Image (cartoon, rainbow, N blue to C red):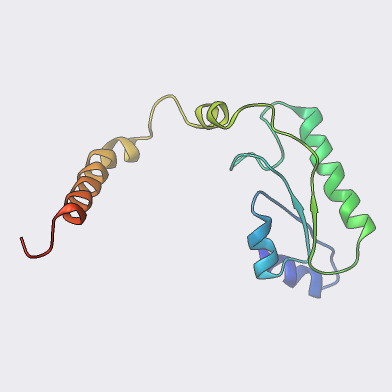
Length: 124
């Protein structure tokens, strides 16, 4: 996304990145950033919360209108109205996808093997 933003900016189009990771936006040089403290995959707000989503979009447009300096990061005052645990539970599907269902036992086995290997004492 940052490369695309810089390319569009070079062509004369203003861009803004709305992200939950402003640290990385700053690191890679995004022209303008609106930082939101929201869970992943819900950058513009909670599903079906039109008011919150419109507020984020309006904030992003306001940043575009008011700044012409590169590297600016604005932090949205919008708050997520769930605890972290509630947000994670709401984000996860009730049933795992077929690939996750198939791979989960294998991943658990690999993690268990790695954990056991790290616990073994060298020279035993």
